Image 1 (cartoon, rainbow, N blue to C red):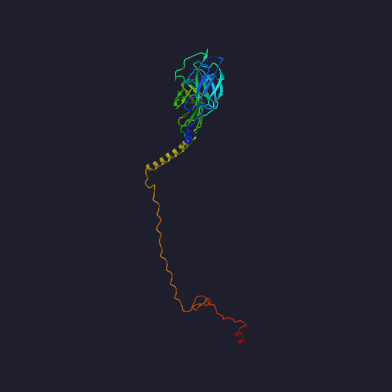
Image 2: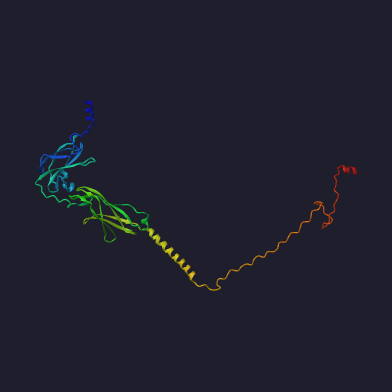
Length: 348
C-alpha cells in the first residue's frame, strides 16, 4: 500500500510554487490614490519566476481595456523595473508621476523578457490630474509609418518584352491610436512625371492593437510597356504615409521586335506582290519558245572483227620468218660453236 501511494505521488503533475498556469498574473497596490511626488508599493504574484518586469503609470486606460494608445500614454521616464523571485512574486516601490494623457489611470505591469508576453493592470488615481472619458471603441485607430518603405521583387524575361511590371511595397506601421485597427484598407497610387497618382484600394488582412506595430506588404503593378521614373505612394484615410521612387527600365525587347517587324513585313509584302503580278499578267504569244530538241544519236553498226586464222601444226619461232611471210627475209646463219667444245677439236 505504501508503494502504491509513493508511485501516485511521483506520477502526479507538479506546478511551480506560488504560480497557477490557468490563472493570469495579479497586481496589487498599497494605495488607490496618491498625488505627484508621492510613493506607492506595487506587489504581484502569479508571474513567471526570474522574469524582468516594467512598471508604469499610464493614462487613458482601464483594467480590461489595456493601455489605450500604447506606451505613449504612460510616464515612461518615471517607470521602474523589477525581477520576480523563484515563486513568481515581486514587491517594489515606485514614485507617483502624472502621465501625458488624462485619467482614468492604471499601474501597468508587463514582462520585458521571455517568449510569452504577459501584462496586468491595477486601477489607480493620480490626485490633481485631469480626468476625461475613455474614447469609444473602434473610433480612435491611427496608423503611422515606423520604418522606411521599400519595394521588393524584380523583373523577368516577359517584362523585357513589355509585360506589366509588378513589385511588393513593404512598410512597417504602428497603431498610435487608442483602439485596434482591424483589416485596414490602404490606397496605393503610382504617378509618372507631373501626372497625379492613380489611387487603387488594397486591403490588408490582420489586426494591429494599440501601441503595436505590424509589417504590411501590398502588391503594386504598372501597365504594360511602362518605363521611366515612377513614384509609389501609400495612403491611409486622408493621410499619405509613405512614398517610394521606382525606376523602370525600357523594354528593349519591344524595340527589337518593332525593328524586325519593319524589315520582315515589307519583304513579305514585296514577295507576295511579285507572285500576284506574275500570276495575273497576260501571256504574249511566241514569247516563250519551246527549247530546241537535239537530234537523236545515230547509231552506226559496229564492224565485226575478222576471224582469226586457223592454227597450224608448226609453231613459228620468234626468230624464224616463213618463206611466204611478207617483208624482207633475214638469212639464217649457222650457230657458232665455241673453240673449246669437243666438236671443234674433232673437226680440226
